[in-house]
Length: 217
Image (cartoon, rainbow, N blue to C red; front, top):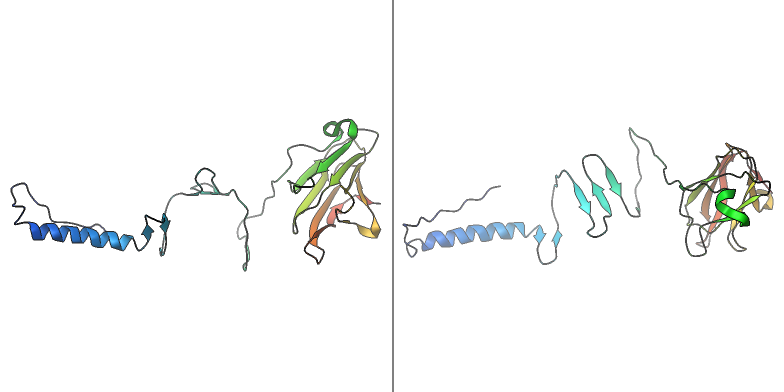
């Protein structure tokens, strides 16, 4: 709401306008105090608003963590949902965390071994494309994941060579049916879906929860 103060003209006496001047200062002080209920210049915070309407919102200074505008809603940080559900109404869920590199014999080089994740870093992608045109098997070594993390391996090439997905090192939990240690795919269209599940001690084990055409040995 706009505020108004009484104008003091150049022809007015300052001493005679003392009451008007004081009233103007009181009006301004009252409005500033009313705003400082919500804005704290010293703390740099805004609180207790009942409604905020804006065309855009950005959170983060040197590094943007949230960017909302007329066309997108981008969250560039981890999101934790506690005590509630995520409901998708009128839309779908799109997984687009795809490794830009296909894990194949060319990428692996002479070692014919590729690591997914490391001893100090989680596997970084949700979807991994694999393929193999060589006569020898390509080994994909999967490292430990975060509880609740999912990984999809999809054989996208037409080479037909074996791709063996196995544990990176002894001690990285890899729980397969029948006590197997290796998942093998060798045909375009084959997939395997893995989920990291709490083993009851706060550590995660990789389990197969879906897929098609793969074998376990």
